[in-house]
Image (tube, rainbow, N blue to C red; front, side):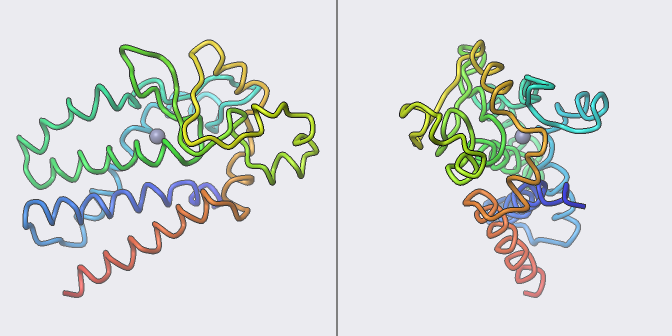
Length: 211
Ligand SMILES: [Zn+2]
């Protein structure tokens, strides 16, 4: 059941994608449009299915120092390429495009190890509002690790990045198998933002259907 908590941000993304597409094209929203939007907002994470099938879970950690975001998580490539869908299919093309863009935005600040923003020209991964160890100060303090960190690793940065060779090392040392418990069953700014976005999306979706 707790795994659902990690999906709420994408459910919000799917709902927002429908509302934005509706505003752009002037299309009246029907309830089942939200079902399609929510399904499409998970689209990029299809690249996690092989790991889910193999390990029964998805996590970059010492056990598996690899991020699934190596298949369908390339914004520089996919955002322009997927723009053919709004051109070809209008409203539902916009739903798809907006859902994927919002998914990428969420992956840039939420859980996980960011995105390879510049692929295919660069394999460097980037993430907003983060430490390179990818853990919150509260978590590091509770584990007694804060004092052991050099000053450069303690610093919360607007944008952090890892090269393709150093990312597996960081994931081995700092990745968590139990990231859902740590990130979604406790209060922190990421869970607060994602839960708030979900509540706002449900309210807006309800209002749009009552009009
Ligand atoms: Zn993703």
